[in-house]
Image (cartoon, rainbow, N blue to C red; front, side, top):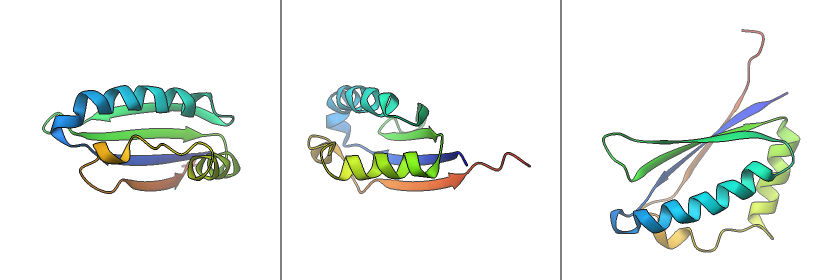
Length: 98
C-alpha cells in the first residue's frame, strides 16, 4: 500500500538561503531513493521560513528503509543548525478506495 509523508520544517530566517541549498541536495537523494514516487515542497506564503515536504512512497516498507537510512549512513548533519524548531513528520496511508 502506498503512503504519503508530510515533513514540516521551520527554518531560522537568517539561514533561509543555506536551507534551500541543503534541501535541494537532500531532496535529490530522497527522490533517487528506491520506492520514492516523488517529493514536492510547499513554502508558506505568509511565512517563507516554513516548508512542507510532501513525500510519496510506493510502500510502507520503502518509507521504513528510507527512514532507517536517514537515521544512519544517510543522516543529514548540516540541516539541524538551520532549523528554528524540531521537524514534524506525519505519515498517511493512501486510501485509494475512497
